[in-house]
Amino acid sequence: MSEKDKFTLRRACRARLVPRGTKVLLSEGVEFFAWRARGGEYEVFGLFGAALIDAADAAGIGIPGVAAKLCSPVQPPAGVDCGAPENAPEEAGAGVSQDDLWNVAKTVYDPEIPVNIVDLGLVYSMEIKNEDGKNKVFVDMTLTAPGCALGPVIANDLKEKIESLPSVAEAVVNIVWDPPWNQDMMSQEARMTLGLL
Image 1: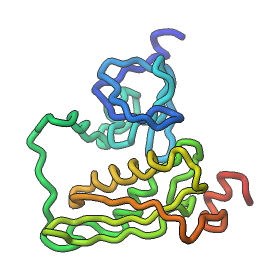
Image 2: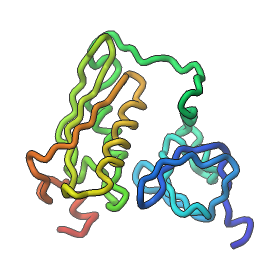
Image 3: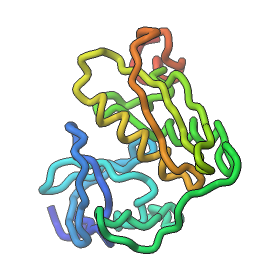
Image 4: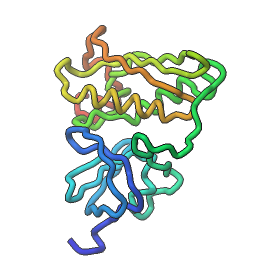
């Protein structure tokens, strides 16, 4: 591998290690040697192994051609106040729509399956409620199997992505088992991607 085959993170980026989903903060200057676009994320490979970086942090990746307009600042570590405004919409659903919720849910992937959780049929419902002047989103979702070890990782990823919407104060993601998931719940695109058609 030559120097031209290496990329360097231009700023710190939130990431999830593959395949476990462990959340990490990759530091500015970390080198990696390969990458690929994967749904709404970029998978990078380096001495740390493989990690998924959200498209919102794409400008920090340092790959030529990755649009800087996708960039949003990395959230500061817990306990560091950068003066971010609080989300406090006045009406239930003000500033957020069902389309917004479903679109952001389509950026969440099971780390072991190359299909988003919406097309897999894992998300059953998303409801916006106004509580104390703030929008809260309540989600019912399931998993492909009750013993899925990555279930909490997937649910937390969905929670964080919904909460990243400017007019959402909080998201509550419930994993439910009724109705039980089956392959018929997948979209045709998902079945084609997985070779089930």
